[in-house]
Image 1 (cartoon, rainbow, N blue to C red):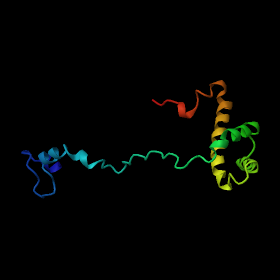
Image 2 (cartoon, rainbow, N blue to C red):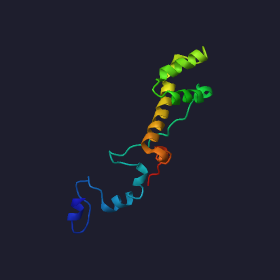
Image 3 (tube, one colour):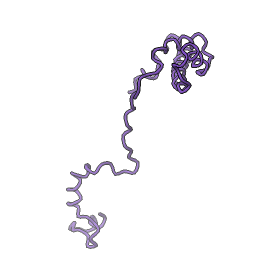
Image 4 (tube, one colour):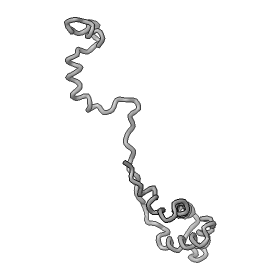
Length: 131
C-alpha cells in the first residue's frame, strides 16, 4: 500500500504482491462476511443449560430449609443423614452435592440479610440492574 501511495499516478506496484487500491476498497463491502479476524475475538458463550432431570429433593426442600434455619451451623451431610433416617431408602448418599448446593444458596441469603438488613431484598445480586 505504501508503494501505491508513493507513486504519483496511483498505479499498482510491480512486484505483484500489493493489491490495487480499487480492488482493496471494493473488497471491503464483503469483508464482514468472513467474520471477526482479530486474534482477540472470542465466540459468544453458550447459554446456561437447564435442569435435565426432575429435582430429587423437591418434596423435602421446605423441610430441609426449616432444619437449616433452626440450626444453620449443621452440615449438609447431617441434613441428608436426617432425611435418610426419616425416609429410609428414598434419599441416597449421592444427593450430598445437591444438598450442598441448596445450603450454599441459603447461606448466601442469610449472609446477605446480615450485611444489608432490611434492604437485603434490594441488594440481591440477581436483581441488581447493570447499565
